[in-house]
Amino acid sequence: MQAVEVFAPASVANLSCGFDVLGLCLEGVGDRMRFTQTEEKGIRIVHTSPSDLPTDPTKNVAGVAAQALLKDYPLSGGICIEIDKGILPGSGIGSSAASAVGAVVGVNALLEKPLAKEDLLPYALAGEAIASQAKHADNIAPALLGGMILVRSVEPMDVLKLPCPKELFVVVLHPQIELKTAEARALLGENVLLKNAIQQWANVGALVHALHTQDDELLAQSLQDVVAEPVRKKLIPGYDPIKASAMDNGALGCGISGAGPSIFALVKGKEKGEQVAKAMANNCTQLGINHKVYLSAINARGAEIINPK
Ligand code: HSE
Image 1 (cartoon, helix red, strand yellow):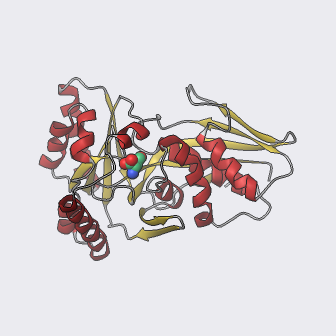
Image 2: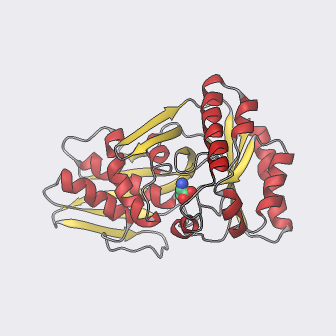
């Protein structure tokens, strides 16, 4: 194969209680990437839409992820990676993870003997790690594999695909400001109060149980974050009223998407999703905050090759 095109989806990490261990894959929002084999060795990065991201493959997450995979599975020539970013960096919906995941899916497709998708995770992680300066797979695992994912361990990599309730939709409200993941992580410090840790891991367990038993009430109760939200919400203008508008309109839960500034709400049914999306967007407009809003089903497929099909 000489060239492939990949769609790498956006994702929502943490899902309130699951800091660094829970995430889900979004439908329709993401990056398009084209990979062409070249005779010249090495990786060349080209942005096909306006972007301030580096083109140096040692500094670009897609380049780093691609190089990590090629180090173990070399090609005779090189690869040109054209990136059309559909996700703004620093938006909180897994921009760097999408690029890292897209890179390994594209490079893998050009290998003589492609690896199974799961085996690509450590290579995508190498790329994602340079953006957030930490190793967490709660964006890359859902972006690669689709669905809702629990990351049990990153070294060694061990992820579990969780069952997704039918009719679960995600509203994502993106206030148009940029938050760097590394900075939002630095704010959290090193320690968590034991009473908060107890509450948080109880909620993670309850959330997983709720997904397995299709218990929406328990799902709603467990979507709480006592670790990152209280600290990080200060970085997001209008966070409390926007969250209140989602909850008042029947969202099961609402929280910071990844490191923010995007805010996600989980909702049962598309109609309810439209209502919640409208309420959150209206609230943002009243507060004078520029924003974009998405309503998405949960994408069960993850990153995929879109050309050739
Ligand atoms: N779990 C990570 C964090 C996700 O919250 O820092 C970053 O997108």
